[in-house]
Every structure is written in C-alpha cells, then in structure tokens.
Image (cartoon, rainbow, N blue to C red; front, side, top):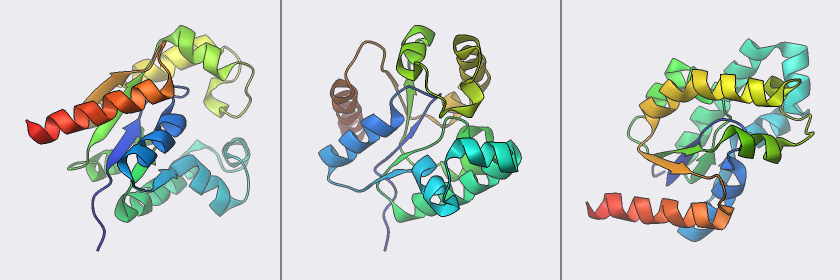
Amino acid sequence: MTDSPAVVLVGPPAVGKSTVGALLAGRLGVSFCDVDTVIERQQDRPITEIFAELGEPAFRRLELEATLAALAAGGVLALGGGAVTNAQLRAALAGHRVVWLRTTVHEAVRRVGGSTTRPLLTGDVAGNWKRLASQRAPHYEEVATIVVDTAGRTPAQVAAEIVDQLTSQELG
C-alpha cells in the first residue's frame, strides 16, 4: 500500500525544487523523486536532447507518465517547471500537499547562470524566465496548498519553512 506523497514541489525553473526536495525528504524521512531525472534515466539522454529530438509535446507526455508513476509511489516529488501546464497532471495533484516555490527573476537568472540544461530558458534567460513564470503562475496557484518564497534564502531555510507550514496545516 502506498501513501500520498509527503509533498509535491512545483514552480518555475531555478526556484530550488530539486535541492529543497532532497533536503525536505530527509527531514520528513521519506523518499525523494526528481521527475526530470527519472525521465532522463528512462530516455537515457538529457532533457535538452529530448526536447531537441522529440519536441516539447512528446516531452510533456513523458513527463505526465513519469509524474503519475511518482505520485503513486509516494514520497517528496520535484516536478518539472512546466508540468502544471497539463490539465490531467493538475487534476492528479488534487488531494496532495503541493508547495509552489517562488523566487525573483534576478535570483533565477543568478541561479541559472550560463547553464544550457534548461531548454526553455536559452537566449534571453531573464525574459524567458519571466514569461514562463507569468504564464504558469495561474496553474501553480491552482494546485498549491502552500506557497514559499525562496529568494535570498538557503535551501535548508526553505525546507524548514515547508515543514513548519505542513505542521501548521496538520494542526489547523
């Protein structure tokens, strides 16, 4: 028997979902799953190559399948930034504790740096990040049960706040 995930992290690229997720899983004593990493292992290639060779729609189908499997397995999940654009995936998040991690464009650009591993941010990183974050914000808001800002904070501070908010919800 599998329990619901302890928490599902969503948000735009470079908010810290993977880093915070691993710390949070440790604090909660549960497993951690980064859905992008799962997809890369299944496809035996990086996300950038999947996007380039198969296109975004095919990637989103792979992402949905991997996310549904991860939700069924339980633990802490870090979803890809665009996962919430899929209505079926958003519906699957109902009943789960979902944390929307937010940051500023300045912080996101600093974190991304010259990385080429984020296919939707190439070129004008700041402009592309702002556009994606803005377009996806209504979807993040729709699924979120907790919202946490990460700018200027360490991953450990963010994980601690999530634990505090989860505890408050359980006691409330």
